Length: 169
Image 1 (tube, helix red, strand yellow):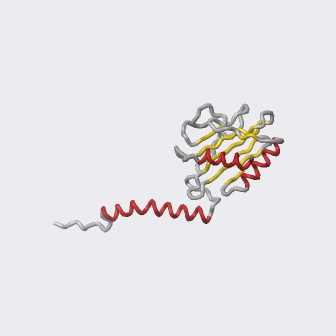
Image 2: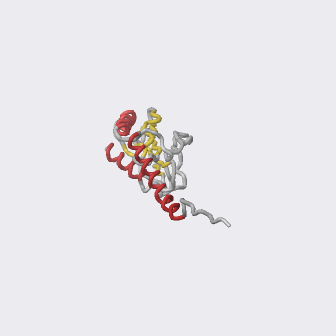
Image 3: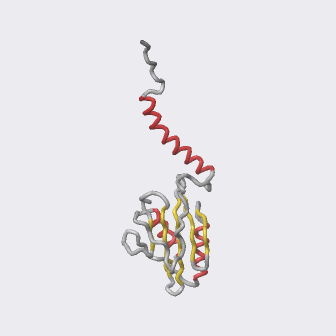
């Protein structure tokens, strides 16, 4: 009767492999992200097809907590619109300038009263879709910021819009 040869890739080695492999993948992804910051990542997700203005409204937030909108009716997703002074075209120009001055952002659509931009996270390349809708008679800008992937955004979308609000004032 022949004896089975012990495998060189035994359960101990397998355990080490499954611990090290995710770390290596993460480090490689981060390295690629640093070297090529505009390259899409597996975490960028697909651009939603429901964005834009329909009947004077931005898209509603999904049920997940990774979205905020000034048009939301529920407290979890609601954020105040941004007040502005002057003309709507000046408000859009200021937003465009501010967004273009930030890293890892790309303006996708710009109209006389609407702006849509993508914001990507530094290391993993998660993409958030951010929209601004200027209302000339009320002198406010409705805002919406939503993560494409995942459940939680750890408050990043709300923080981003509050930072934009403070920089525009």
